[in-house]
Image (cartoon, rainbow, N blue to C red; front, side, top):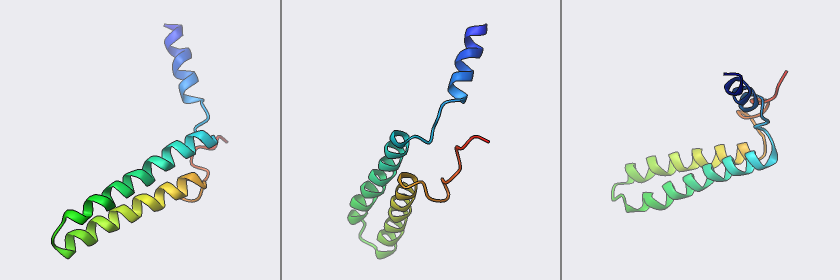
Length: 80
């Protein structure tokens, strides 16, 4: 029973704002945005293309903000 408490403590106290974590999660968001943008070209209607490109741009912007530690991610994982 104490081992479970120790593992939960280690997981909850880990540093999630390290450079490697930001690079991995940010590049995942950027890659998802590029994937959505690439597949938006198959839509025939302009409204579909516009909607997919706007979703893609939001994903790329969120990924860039995560990599450079900008808002809304700034001070999100900091411990007081």
